[in-house]
Image (tube, rainbow, N blue to C red; front, top):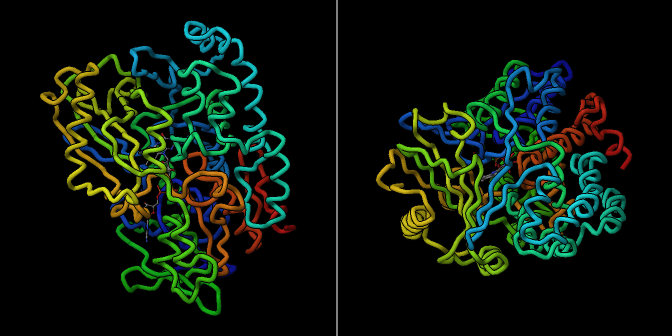
Length: 518
Ligand SMILES: Cc1cc2nc3c(=O)[nH]c(=O)nc-3n(C[C@H](O)[C@H](O)[C@H](O)COP(=O)(O)OP(=O)(O)OC[C@H]3O[C@@H](n4cnc5c(N)ncnc54)[C@H](O)[C@@H]3O)c2cc1C
């Protein structure tokens, strides 16, 4: 094992997008870095499997804010376009409501207005006002970098609070949206985005309204070969920089001496490191990888009080035919919105009715399935394992229900055309990814778990221990976890005297000085 000339060496636990981005930044800064990944391949929730010629991205499917992904490549002196071609999607997604009406969600406000006029002309008139109201939220998170700075001091929070108050970004998303739109379809369309990050639109603060603006500004994209191409490109970049990836290497312990990390242990093997970045689930990191005696703040009691995000039930379907009525991204909604969300998040019960998101990547990239076939994935939001659901029983039942509903909805002969059928349940999130309570999106994004109130990028428990990914600031989503790597790198750079690195489109502005001063 080599050490850098300054003697520093880093270990990154987990290879989700956040772990990969942090590892690239560290390696690019001259710190020899090893990624330790539990599973056979890198990617975390963005895993991919191929069966009988059908290619399935298992998690993220929408690429938004490509400039955020590019910032990691720029940190290493490269460009994303050196590795990948991105394809813009139009529409971003198609939304089918329970009453048979539908909307094509696009970035162009004029095209949105012309569709909205059919349901409520006043709403169409107010779209510009709504976009003007959420623009400063987007600017605060992206342009002013609230999303890529660590919130690990009270001082950082004091700077954040006035902005949040001025923008009313503390209000629940649905309340903010109700002020602009009357029609229930429009209220859904502009408020549901927190669900993409495991948040409850009726409780998540309006800071998450930066997402519709981010989609409008930056578009929704796909890349040939699927989301996993982005994972592979980041893995390749990391290895080109000299980084080491060890798969099937579950970390069992973060070791320490005198309150400072000394390395990690995998299956009893010790790997020295003086910087350890955990991309694993936050509660798993603190409760399983640190000794009880190393924890003052993140005790088991405190971790039990952290609200974990909802989970997902996923079906991967390889189908010997095409369904042209599906867009690349399609939402098929049941009648209930607030009640269903409450059942998932608060009552934590699995209900008879459900809404679905469908991914049909062959719409854009023929190579994702054999000729004339579809590789579909169906995502149903469900409660996390706090529901007590036995998924060995509930999974097969829900699978049949989903297939029934899809056939009734219009996917004819779906069952009889299946070549591939795989399920992924909250139990799989728990066992495969060490996700506490089988959460799909880490710590739930709610006001009391946002910014300073979220687990910090710089751990309070051990010197040299940092967190990155969906459980820390700013939160889930591919752009979110890549921004978290920027925030985490800023902490490490301040603590270990590393060089500044490019952040989004602005070289040399990772918030190092701010941290050092705080
Ligand atoms: C079904 C689904 C659909 C989504 N769709 C989108 C989308 O369209 N667009 C979008 O932007 N976002 C989407 N998201 C959210 C996004 O995918 C995630 O927020 C993001 O990928 C999580 O990245 P992460 O850095 O937190 O790491 P994760 O992906 O959570 O990876 C963590 C890694 O750590 C590993 N690990 C855990 N414990 C250990 C250990 N002890 N030792 C070694 N390794 C360990 C795990 O195996 C895993 O590989 C989706 C999420 C899901 C679940």
